[in-house]
Each structure stands twice: as structure tokens, then as C-alpha cells.
Amino acid sequence: LAKTTQPISMDSYEGQEVNITCSHNNIATNDYITWYQQFPSQGPRFIIQGYKTKVTNEVASLFIPADRKSSTLSLPRVSLSDTAVYYCLVGDGGAGSYQLTFGKGTKLSVIP
Amino acid sequence: DAGITQSPRHKVTETGTPVTLRCHQTENHRYMYWYRQDPGHGLRLIHYSYGVKDTDKGEVSDGYSVSRSKTEDFLLTLESATSSQTSVYFCAISAGTGVDDEQFFGPGTRLTVL
Image (cartoon, rainbow over all chains, first blue to last red):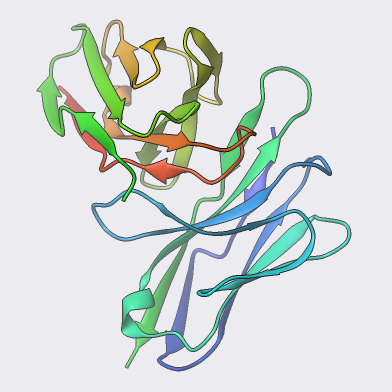
């Protein structure tokens, strides 16, 4: 089973760029790395997903090095509404049934 | 928002009783998932389904069973609830071609086992 590690919490001021890194091992070359955002009392919400190098959408960027042992979610110019818990999710298509492993989450607090 | 509902939204039950949680989708998506979320553990996969009658176990499947007799419904059953199964349960759906594609999550069911 893939193991993931994320920082427990981070603080940032409004308008700054925030980078959250997830370390993960035992993921296959064809498995996605995905990030989700979760607000209190809600289900997680998809942010971004990628296999390798860099992916960018309208809300975030995802950086994945060649060895795929980590990934970094980058949030440009955060606002108070970005205060939430952020999770990485990796797939593990190794032996047995396919597994999906969430990190334990990084609580981001954005300060005015 | 994706058409996904969970019922009930809250439930309190006693140890040893059977409990069934329902996930219903209106999107006709292929993949459906059940997760539990606990403080300090994040989200953990219980079971997932890749089609009608096609299911597979996740990381924490012991004590849980699932059934999917129709595309739109995915049921999670606790045959004999225990206090360790007190948790928030999330259902998710995905229209992707792979089990790790983008998922849409339901609002969650808060289950308390006394």
C-alpha cells in the first residue's frame, strides 16, 4: 500500500503563493496524483490531477518530479476563502486489488 | 454539482445492530466509492465499484460489505456495527476510465455507534 506524508498545517498571508508538498512511494508510473480541497462539514472537492512534470488549471498548479516520489500543489495568491484542508491522493495498482491512498491532509490557514 | 446524495445524513445506532448506508447518483457514472473519515486518519477507502455487481475491497474493508445492483445505487452495510465504526462516511462517484480519475463526493453520513 502506498504511503503518503503531508505537513499537518501551514499558515499564509493573503495574496501569497502557497506550496504544499506530499511525499509518496510505491506508486506506479501510470497512476494519477490528485489533490482535493475540503471545507468543514463538506465532502472533498477535486482541485487538480497529473501524471508527471507540471499541470496547471484555473485555480492551481501541480509539480511532479521525474521520480514521482513527491508532488507539490501550488496555490497562487491565496485568499481567506482558501482556508481549508488539502489532501493528496495516490493510486497503487500493485499486487491485489487497486488501492487509493489519501494523505492525512494539510490544514491551510490564510491570515488577513 | 454532481448529482450524488447519501442517506441517511445522520444515524445513531447501537453496537451489534446492522446498518445500511445508501449512495445514489443521477450521473450514470461507472465508478462509485465508499470512504470513512476519522480524525488523525484522513479519508480511507472501504470499497469501490467499477460497474453493476463489480466491487473490490479497499484499505479498511473488514466489517463492511457493499452491493451495487443498479448503476445509480451503491449500498454500504455494516453487518454488526461496532463503536470503532463511528465515523463520517463519504460516497464518491467518477466518470473516468480509471479508478483513480477525478471523483465527486457526496455530503457525507455521520454515523454514531453507541
